[in-house]
Length: 441
Image 1 (cartoon, one colour):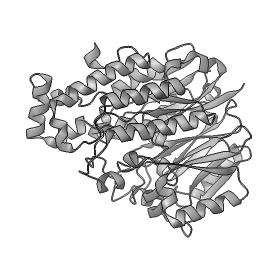
Image 2 (cartoon, rainbow, N blue to C red):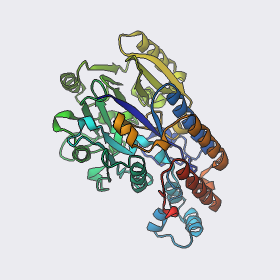
Image 3 (cartoon, one colour):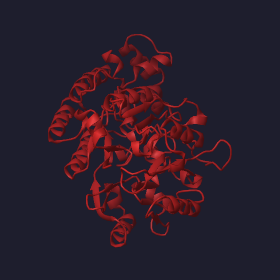
Image 4 (tube, one colour):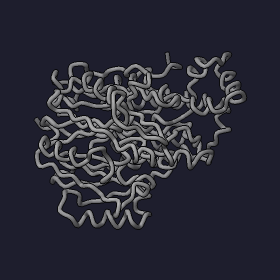
């Protein structure tokens, strides 16, 4: 059956700011307390979505979450009217207000792990929401993420959306950022590669930064997604690269169909893993970048592997990269050498995503990949699919509601909460998503 990989990009929210909340994400730490531009962040994301849609790639939009998250602040002991809760938090614990205001839900590669119907025992598309339990500002995303996914993938004859795993360390799940699918045509059964950083039973762990994904979580997600046991492989991320800032596997590897593009130091027992994949994946093609060409540090700084690898109609592939990859002479030299080699990648597409990159998220962080056949495409909410009309409407919406300058201190402004609610109320109407947010109920 014909099927296509569709990309659903997260739209940066109105409180996009640089607070350095993500320990282990070196870009996030590096840009702490700098001035952000939420309006530009949203427009950069929309331009990427529209360009890919114009190039023939099916592209959807996932809306931001409500921020500041007043409910989280109330859970942490602040009381009064919503404006009073924000004011108290800004004085007593500004770091909590920053966490409650994070726009990190824009990186929807962490929203869920997806299993296409071709791989599922019950023939449905499954999406398991990530618990993101390792960090406060991300752990609070799951309930709204689940509501959004249910509003987009609402037809229960075709889709099954599962809630997150228990939010405890042993079951830490960071979603599709630690998951790859390899195979031939998208509509055929594929091999799903789950990458974990920590195995509570055995294995080595990083020393400097935490390993956010556990093997137990990956195994549980595979069960929830009804994945055929014959179609799964579990592999450990190299703890040494985690300690160099590779907080998710999608910072060091990306796959598409038969191709796995990764750094030569990405995995524990990498040679054995490549042999295992060669036995499972027809025409498997690993592209392993040696440290002599690109170091792990260079990969982290440029987000070379946090790129999107997309199939064009003729079977060739396009690599979607952030501008930082072109600005690094060694990385750009390697990429041009890659184009000259015998592999499907023949196009480099560069986008300016500096607002997202400065907070630690590149092209692949911004998108959730969902393989759908024709019947499933027809069953999802069509209002979220990018086209000329939606692009123009969302650009006008951003111009109307978004600020072009935001600092951590600005989060205390009670007007920011009101602006956000008005914007999201309008957005749910544009995207026909119903009442998603607590303030709408």
